[in-house]
Length: 71
Image 1 (cartoon, one colour):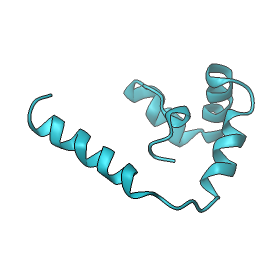
Image 2 (cartoon, rainbow, N blue to C red):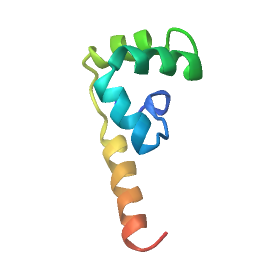
Image 3 (cartoon, rainbow, N blue to C red):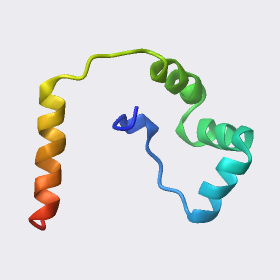
Image 4 (cartoon, rainbow, N blue to C red):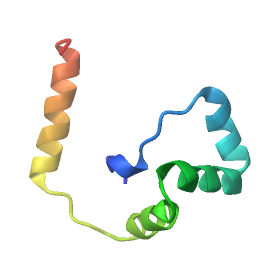
């Protein structure tokens, strides 16, 4: 789920910290912002084992090489 776009959010440090301290508040805010049911969908997806294809790792490596070269 680390690379799932629906699992991405830009948070200030205060909201990030508050999310760890108050997970229920965070999931309510997440659903409010991302859409009702997103938290449940992410939870279900995170509990499923899925094979990761070689192409995935090649794309990640390509992105990392790009960062190293300043792209």
